[in-house]
Amino acid sequence: MYPSPPPLPEHAAGPSPYTYADAHRGHRRWSAPWHSRTVRAVALAALLTLSGVLILGIVRRQTGTEGFLVGVGLAVFPVPLLIAAFCWLDRIEPEPWRNLAFAFAWGSCAATLVAVLANGFATDWLANNIASASPTEAQAWGSTVIAPIVEEVMKAAAVLLLYRFRRRDFDGITDGIVIAGITATGFAFTENVLYLGSAFGEDQSMGHTGLNSLTAGTFFVRIVVSPFAHPLFTILTGLAVGAAAARYPRRRGARAGLVLLGLATAVLLHGIWNAASDLGDAGFLSVYGLFMVPVLLGLTWLALWARRQELLSVREHLAPYVATGWLASPEPTALSSLRTRALARDIARRAHGPAAARAVTSYVALATALSFHRRRARLTGPPPDFATRERELLEGLWRHRPWAGPALLQAWAGGTGMPGPAAPPAGEPRREP
Image (cartoon, rainbow, N blue to C red; front, side):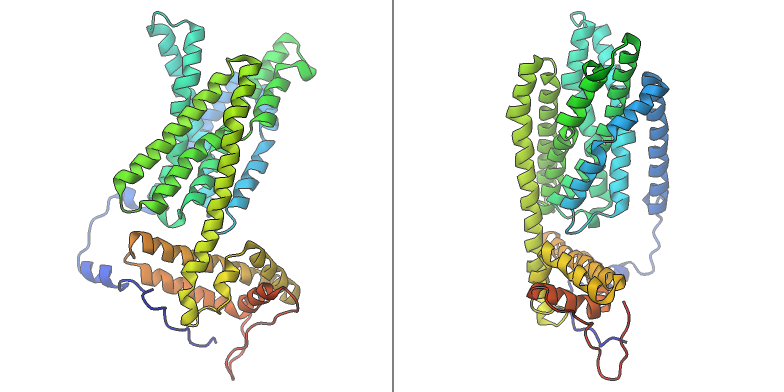
């Protein structure tokens, strides 16, 4: 048994958790089937599966079986590195795996399917209906105008869907960047399979091999030089969605305007990048150095700054729980340090084994979720279930505190010594985590 939990901090409870239920007691309202989470999940899984089967067939038909296998083998190289980078950025409050899986699947299946079909249709329409448009000109217009619009809109759809239906998991700029980056990584993977497989097929037909082959050149440009291109474009949209969610939660017009601005910027940069391929080596290098690298460095700095702001937010919004005894006074500051978090896990593992380390991990995750829950309530106003959710998070903290609390405090003090679990009240046995 644990000691009785402390009271909630002043002004933390928000409205009564029974307000909404009381207002609707006795009124059973009909709900459309598509309002069910299960129905939506099944429909979405079916859509992504169908998209995956169709895009697989299209790519294999264009590249051939051998080209497809070579394309997959070469295109997969940057994927683990990019996903690891985005997961590293998202360490403060990691996105649920289902959100990341959806984002990657949407980018690699649904978004690429629509992009391949729409880009091909638009290019053919331009060539057949515009008298002055030759096939080469139609291809250029499709690459620099049509493709950026279609592809960025389709990738942005994943970010907007998660913002709409997983609002609790969407807390600001970092989440927008991570979801956009994972989506674009999936899109780039499938697109690279198509380009590399097609290049391999052309090399096979012409007898080209080695470093002078089209496959080697395509690999160098798309995998070595610019694996970050698609993520970079879509991150601009994700950044805008995250900023809109954090800064303008109650102003629909401001949110829409900011998202459209981010999307337009992504389309513009994408169009400039695609146009660079027609400017020769000097033009390509100029665009790469003057646009891509500075934008990449700027967004990297912004992502790190946003993560730092989230850590500071953890300290600020957990402070009220110190006064009522839920947290020890150093804990909000300790929890705002990634180094201290990692050190606390190591201390708990060395002292008491993997179970204690897992307790620290759970404690840190719950504390972070609690701080974001409180921050979201400050921005948007407390939802009807604010107090219920707050109580769930606090009780979760209380269960893990006997093991996690001492390890966290020891890590904050410098990591010397081996802490033990907090002592329960006299006459009450300890509980393993």
